[in-house]
Image (cartoon, rainbow, N blue to C red; front, side):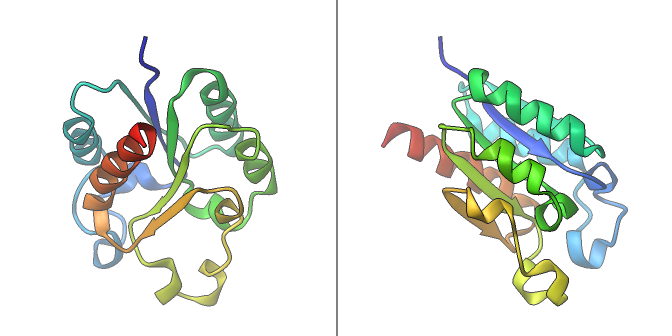
Length: 144
């Protein structure tokens, strides 16, 4: 049985399409999920969003046993959560850190990612379509 790709989203991403469209665009999270499922093709995919750090960490714990790989947009937890980093360090499958905006062109508070300390790859600044690119990249990592 093929293990699914987990696409995990952190706080405020449920507001995509409405939240700061000049930064994040007008694509909704439901549309992002559709892009991911199209990119995954027949590969199973679990797509989730939470505003809670504990829930996100619990999903990472679940993915340790259940996922073939993780694509994670931890949003603000990227820059604040050592607990999330510790959870991701337990993951043996590939991990891609994803950001809709280019975090390095933003305010200095967004320049240090704890998640990058574990991620196998980091994608930023491709807008919502970056999710589909990340799914394809993870599939290539799994094949290679």
